[in-house]
Figure 1 (cartoon, helix red, strand yellow):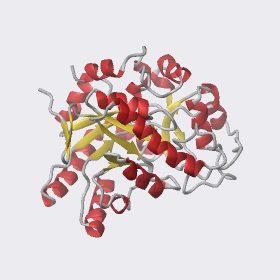
Figure 2 (spheres, helix red, strand yellow):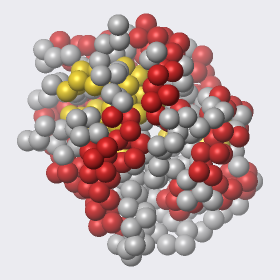
Figure 3 (cartoon, one colour):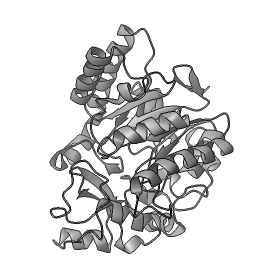
Figure 4 (cartoon, one colour):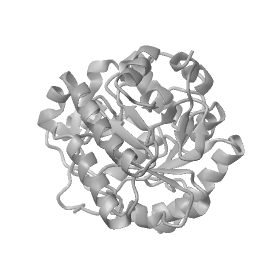
Length: 350
């Protein structure tokens, strides 16, 4: 019998978290559908307001407005479901996004693309759970020790994101291939760190494994390593309910695994994306001057970056796939048809 995923007093019927995908790929539609089927639905806050009419003039307010709107959309789909946000630490307005999500009633905040050092402070006094994304024993140790000393609290859940994940990765570019060979040992070390803090705080801190999860066998492997759940992203893109443009979904369906390449993101981290004409041009050294800096990232100089990540992710979300940055997981080539969220979850937990 499959056990649910317990996050404090919250229990998801299935031990699955849908990974956050920005810009505009996992919004209220996908998150609500996953939550309705018993998983944890996650909305990405990254430039979430890109469809708002005033986005180019006032992206800050447009994004805060859209955080509320997308959570409401997901709640209407799954009134009793668990719904949260993925909010990147690298965002310039990280604190504002977290506090707006808390105010809107998010059940959970998952944070990566940097260590969410201040996250406990931003959710203080609320029921919103907090979950860092870590990729190494060192990162888990540093962050949980810091939270313990500064805030007297620990994580409610920990996501371990492995080297097969899509989007920004928590590894140096030169170590990703090596990590893919022996990452199970790192997982076990991270779980030991989490258990230590769980015992200290007399609470169960579930560990969720992410990166390359696409079959029932992958789920079983995650549990055999000591995880209490899995996080799945790429597999949910070619679904009826995914918020992405149909051309974006088709790009996934037409891809082969070898089309997933490691790129250097303007954010300063390596990431995994589909190799298309845009990525080939960037690799050849071509520069794409941003039309307008939207001030989305903390550390970004428009004069130094090869392209604007917001600009290219919005192109992807709008279906202009040849001129876009299309993040994906290592196993993107194994999905060959559009399915429903219900069907995907049945495949993983039959």
